[in-house]
Length: 293
Length: 126
Image (cartoon, rainbow over all chains, first blue to last red; front, top):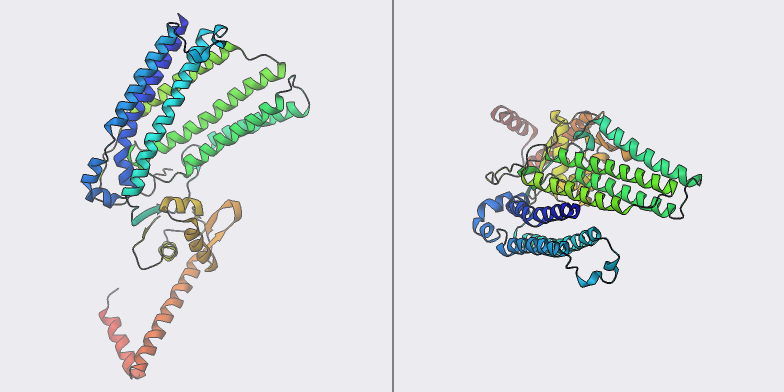
């Protein structure tokens, strides 16, 4: 019975990824063109109309959603794909369902990103960059969007987390030879999440800020900080396991995967409900700054 | 404060940036000690090459308008208002000298040039 819960979560994830996300992405097309060149956008309605998100792309996404759900359903009913054999004989059913879902998402993502890159290439070729550009002379910092105490708290936790790893490593308190590899992975993940946070703050005010509700970047910065906290939490759990040589529980992998999927679905649906501002403002350049203090 | 650039303008882009920062300081929109965005941020926002913005910042630094303090960032200098004032006076003096030189080579004497300047001052409203 509980595997049906996994199936429902993965099916919802497929709907979020291949129906909700493309629909939201399609709404971004015109704002992206307008952001690139507002004056051109206002004077070339025929090109804009011709560039409306190709129905083939939406149909392909919807078809992939259907295929994903059907394949997951087939796996749920025991029709396991051949590529899992012979390992599948000893593999728990939920694991096959999870692996199938990850594979379907991976293939779908390659196709989706391919479609997006086709659109971006078309836009770079057909929509010239604006002659008139505007920018703020105020520096953008994470502190412009979230309270300073929250930044100090998150950065303090990250430092404490990495120092705890180092302490355990240097004093040899671990019981597994994999410790330093795990530490290297944790440092790499921390650096990656830090870079994501920096990119979010440094991103120039673009179509996302124009179409989304006010304070959109603030939400992004909070999400990046939340991601950092999640990493610290997972890192601490991993450290605890490595410290006491507790083997990774299969059920833990399963539940963390389902929880992650639910979190991802929630984000997709929340983003889809985000109010949109209408595009087109008489060819004026986009607002230069959205910093609120 | 916002700045805007026009790529099709005959004025080079880096000079447009320099002029607008100087203008901001002169009008008080940029105050001494105010931080300025990094070269990367400004270049990204204006969708320009970083070298263009770096060149503008270098010129402003050489003119004594801004100060780059390593990783702390770039700031408007404490004496930026005076420096911008000096720059403007220098520019005005150069323009007047060139004009006087042109008028002298056209055969006008000092009294005539002075009369012309006084008339212009009365006729051209600020």
